[in-house]
Length: 197
Image (cartoon, rainbow, N blue to C red; front, side, top):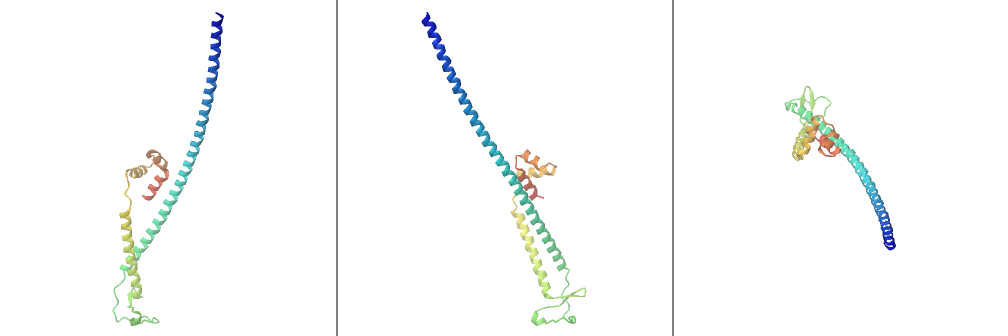
């Protein structure tokens, strides 16, 4: 009977030792797992911070691009306006003055050598060269208008998402709200709105 109790006690001691080893192994395993989780968490936080920095840089770059496009657009529209005004002024130029008109005193006119004809408008005398400049300006206007029409033809058609951006902006939503709602970048939303002003 004593041997039975001794064997049971011995078996209990072995089970206790095995369970203690098992617990120690499990603790080490959980510690390693937590360590790996912390490492992955730190890596993920680093990636997220890098992504946020890239998003900020892209937002700044898109703002810069939109600003540059606006400036170039304003320059082009000012040039087109001045050319259109110049064209209107050139259309108001009078027809050729009769050939018997005399040049003003102090003006050397050599019709055959300089190939000039005298024009008059409200008592002012302009040369044939000014008319040529006007014609050049008019042809420049036509070329600019053709380039503008070509540019309109080359414009990329808006897809559904971009139309949604424009619709939401017309409803008065902010860039951030539109970006969050449509799952787009804030810079992309600003770029779409800037290009379609």
